[in-house]
Length: 124
Image (cartoon, rainbow, N blue to C red; front, side, top):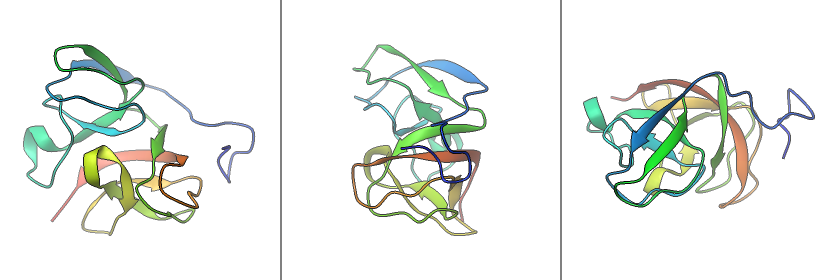
């Protein structure tokens, strides 16, 4: 699905890093600095980026860390909404006190991919 404010483009990857998965990671999900899924614990559990591919424990995986990435929605998300990490790295609607991006497209239902502008992970 093309983003709503940039028709014809699905994402704008400017930067990426490679990490080693410490948990089984699915593609298009938020991932933490420690190689697992992010939580509200902070530090190594903050969101570092979005997986480009799936990875098994011990495998290297590339994370998109700059500007935007396609992320799988856990539920419907409106264009322009702040987003945060939900279950297993999927995106859900966030708040000003808890977010790691902004929806540049919309997801009508769970399982859809939509474009997310990536921000530094903020949580209460």
